[in-house]
Figure 1 (cartoon, rainbow, N blue to C red):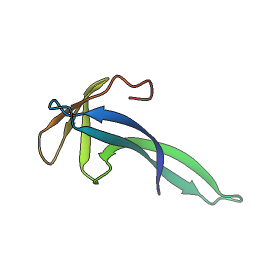
Figure 2 (cartoon, helix red, strand yellow):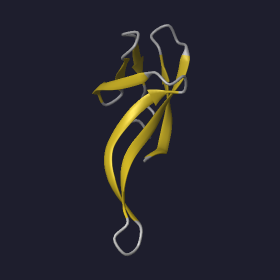
Figure 3 (tube, rainbow, N blue to C red):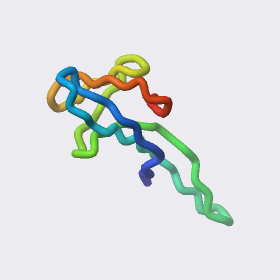
Figure 4 (cartoon, rainbow, N blue to C red):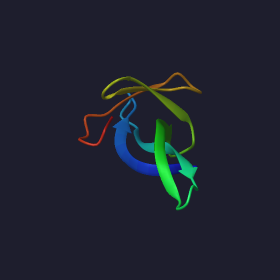
Length: 76
């Protein structure tokens, strides 16, 4: 199961704004009572494009190769 756990603003080099959404995979265990175990986190744009983190505050859209940057406190 995937959950949206956060988001932060970013910008392309030309100044166009974008929002990067942070998702996390969770494994659901149903032994006795249901519980969730957090797994891998991943990033996407609001348009659904996959985003790779280069370093904190620097990102690249997988599908286009375009770079994004963010200095927002919530950036990963």
